Image 1 (cartoon, rainbow, N blue to C red):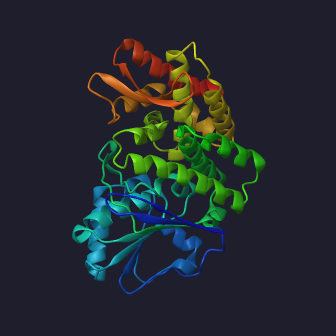
Image 2 (image 1 turned 30 degrees about the horizontal axis):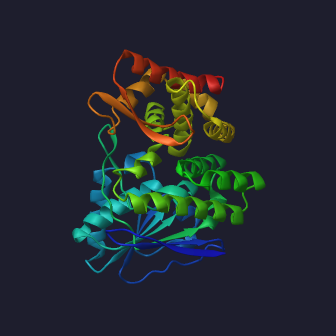
Image 3 (image 1 turned 120 degrees about the vertical axis):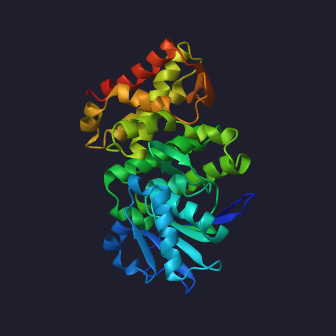
Length: 361
């Protein structure tokens, strides 16, 4: 199976190719190509090692301007010029560092991305965004710089732990739920049809999710309108992730963030017209996250007060209002603003406590 489609961008359009075939033993490389790779992948897939690899650890500590600087220095020492091409192989951290690096090295060089996590395949690989941490502030610096092409080898999922597969599915269902057409129902049909997630099913989930996200980013490329709905689960999820000192990974935290958002929406809209759609998502995500063996332990250690403190510093809030994405009374996402006061603070704190109760910790 091979699927090829294009993402239209005002910066530059780019292709997405999804391959449900054995991972190729070599990458499409040339004398002008340089590879930024997750160092852990070099041990998992020694046959993809290249002579001009730049290997970095794919952890939150690498998502910094200091790392970008060191990669730029390494590119220069290897002889990369304005006609060079950067190949990035890895998950979201590698993508963020590669996007930022490629966009700034000699005022910009082309790059190709091979996402190796399900989360990267279904979500972050398209959209052209980078997000870099600075000090205590997560994702505070970044830009838009799409790759020339994204090549998705579903085969990389074979070596992912179950928790990372679940993290990717949390992001996938988030995108499909944000759609006002049929994507959410199609997603549920695909996942219910196969509990074992065979590669052909994964390929269909990836294609459905990316084609759904394509609609958002082509309509609102620079996050000024409808694309903001894709932050669903993220404002609360980032707070949970940071408060757990990243013991709870990003995709899992986003899943928990969606549960928090649905809980808050029910408090804001107690007399919902039809909350069936939001309840279907809640039940799916809650069951999905129950497959993360370490989650009860991490939630037991999670401080609701610490999560609230992280929530308050989110960059999307206004001076006097919290900006959140929640389901409306009809079960469709909306951007909602609540005044910052003691009542809203308690509402958010209680929602963070709610997820601990939901998993009986």
